[in-house]
Length: 121
Image 1 (cartoon, rainbow, N blue to C red):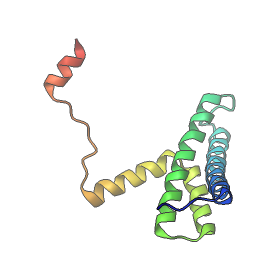
Image 2: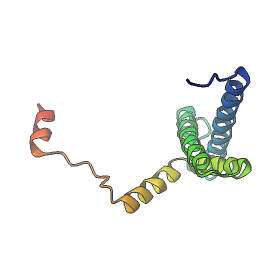
Image 3: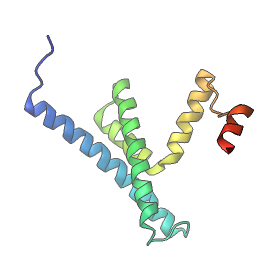
């Protein structure tokens, strides 16, 4: 029989995910500010900022899950979440490269010539 989850446990879990998202998005905001100051992005480009925050939140959440499954300390996990939020898409590409190398995955999408001709119709 499954255990009943207490109200306080549920609140604690929600707060944990809130700080993960917040910390990762703070790292993404810091990355955006760095790019604005270096001239790579415009301050008024709100769409780019939102994209940066969403990607940073995703990277931070994946990092949190990896750290939790490895049994890392909470403070170390928080540092990794913030750093991966700052790195954004770069950390995702690094992890993808690791998986391709480690497991020999083929990350290329090859369409057959028949499939390509169906899409052209």
